[in-house]
Image 1: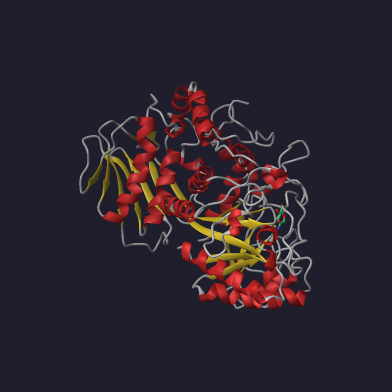
Image 2: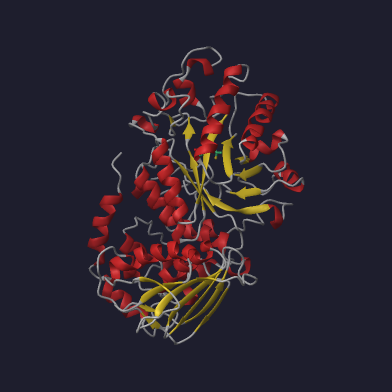
Length: 536
Ligand code: TNX
């Protein structure tokens, strides 16, 4: 599949023409909302996700060619380099990274790790803007990185360009204290039904980082394709990777490519969670190895979209050797603490067989030093307490899940009615599915990760995760259409205080104000009529 990142860059340039004017026009001295009701995204009050505390002031800071990025220690330098990489192309400024204490003649952006974390938690930060510059303080680099994402939004949209722009690079004055409601904020991507190359995944990671989402869940295997190289089982990628829904050519990540994704994610404080779905959704493995099938015959290539009709052969010893090899290799390739083993829709198995299988598979994950995650059906197998259930149901009435939470299991919340971004917006939007109903933009925002399931309280909830299944999602542009503008809403539910996320009519203006940024970035977003887009 051609990777669309390169095409995007071209679109960015085209969309820039009117931008310098728009950004400066909106930016300076404007009320929080202009007379036509358009919010200015670079005001502190209009950030997405909205911070815990904001106090704006008139003491703006304007970057100049003399601005320096000041750090005090090595760990902050990595974040400083990322920030410089964001700001240099569009400003055209040198923005040298200097070891402080030091300020340039026109002030500095200072990133500092400070030990006082009491009021900001480990992923939080404080940001202050005054006429001398910008100071970001955090107890950990992840907090500095979150602060940098905030600073990015406080600059005019043209900052997103990758070529030099003439704009006034003013950051609105004030102070922010901020930290996440949930330490886990996730986004899933199905690379099995359609395969997405490394460059597309990197772009996806950048969208996560932009909205302070810190986990990427890659659905690496399914009936239609096996997408990760496993040394001991080469047919998985020699035979099981060259297909996808609709019959395209598929693909897979070599170990080096997977490492590249993991490393890129780490540089953006995103943890990769690999998913090897089992015992169902295993058609690609069954197509690659005859011995994994109960009848000893290779399964036919699958390019359709049926679910639930495949399973590993649970009566065979080789099945357990297979999953042990795969789990250990994937664990070895993955620095993060989690490994997802699917466990959904194994419709050909009895509950007893499914539970017996999971009683073998889950300890293998734990043995490798990882915390197991499974789709919430896995909780029915009475797994060890550290097993995490990913809820993908459509109803708040889920007593088995509530009982598992009561017993101590943590939950990741991906209710299909709200967080399944592969659901169509409405009957007129072509991409996506509709089995869980339509998900118009307000619906993706109008739910509470901690309040969705009856009888489960917030202490059991790790956080929300969007899902993007790819039965008919083929390109980066398709991904963007499903993600934007819904994804920033779910990201806000994961980050911002509950009391600040219960009003769509307030949020919709802040969301709309992101559009000028997406235009500069070349994002193919859905122009939902429910969002008051600028200029309408
Ligand atoms: C259900 S969610 C599935 C996937 C499909 C998805 C489409 C889940 C655990 N299983 O296999 O791709 O619906 O929305």
